[in-house]
Length: 300
Image (cartoon, rainbow, N blue to C red; front, side, top):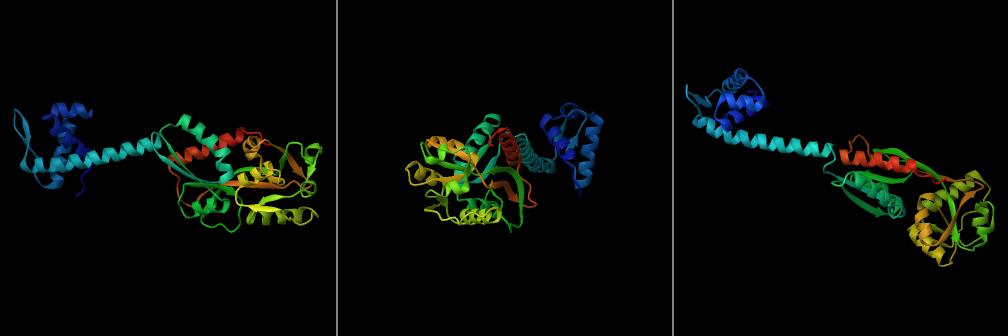
């Protein structure tokens, strides 16, 4: 038994209008085509749904019972189709994002604000967390996308390049580094150094070792979040290094930032999502907008 959607819609229209002529007009088909669809449906079901006479039509007892079911099926289907259309046209939807705390307090709010102007009905759920936790959220499928630096050994996850930026030195106003024409890593490490603990410092030490004969990284303070490091720099406890996307927060703390050289060390950041899993339309649109926003920035 293969009841078609066209047959169900023809039957529902006939029951609603009470006549073949008006039902055919409502569906923009000919009366003979409508009659053929009703006959096909009755043949498929093996029962008479409509009692016909020269003056009027009415549903049979079986037809009345079937009409209740058919109406519910069509209503649920139309609702599902409308929902999909709204998602596709970005009239509704949710985007779940995980981002490192520093990025979540600088770059991402700018992107969310601009995206919401274009798509006010899309909800954005932002999870700010430590760098490694942000990437893990995408691996577990707990968010649509995560943003974070390059990491080796990630499986079952897609990595979409977002930006590649060099480190910059951050220090208080009037600090000795401010008078230098060119700030190198050796210059930076002559002062108490505040860094993020864990993989951030490990990778930085490895890069410095591979690219130059720099002395080992010996931080004076290790913290979890860059906002803490910037606050400590503001308090005169030392200097730090971060990426240019944090410039707004650097300015907020009243600090100075200069490119770091000898060597230039860069960090690649990616948009992570689950491998072989399609993003919802709202998340796809957000990723596109994020790329456009980053592409307009001139950090270097």
